[in-house]
Image (tube, rainbow, N blue to C red; front, side):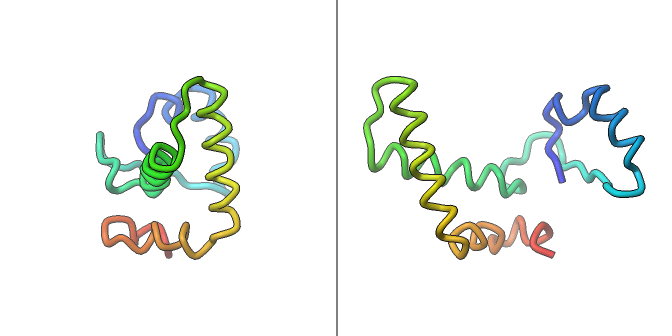
Length: 94
């Protein structure tokens, strides 16, 4: 399941998908709909918690705070799984 970002529609990806059509099937979300994309929900979680708990002043501080938050989420699979419980993205949990 992918959004319609140009990288998901690139010739290189289309060629790869053609070679692996028996192993993978792409499903595209409508144009702009971050509420339907679980990855965007995780991005929102990162933005909320990183800015709520830290005040990064540089790119490296922001990157470090983001890595710390994502490592924390790796140890909280129930929290990540809950992102898929939102009604709009339940299709992706099956």
